[in-house]
Image (tube, rainbow, N blue to C red; front, side):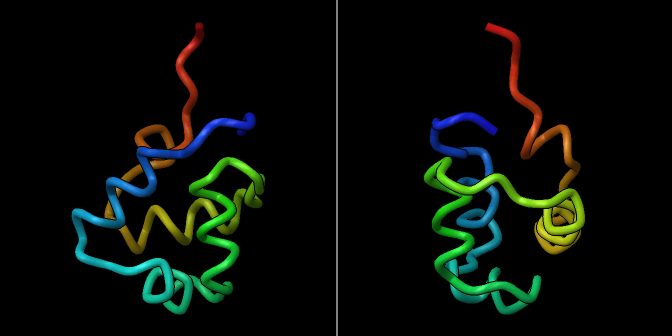
Length: 69
């Protein structure tokens, strides 16, 4: 993940009506970690990416795949 915002993650979280804190608790990290991922300042492990996708009922491709520019 590069230094750009992960708006796909934020949008998926908001669509599930979850706060950063609620998502963080569900996947076993801090709210700050979710905030850093959304702001593009933290590159999560694949294990964390999978946990987030499961919680948000989406796929890795949908949330974390970057389109070629």
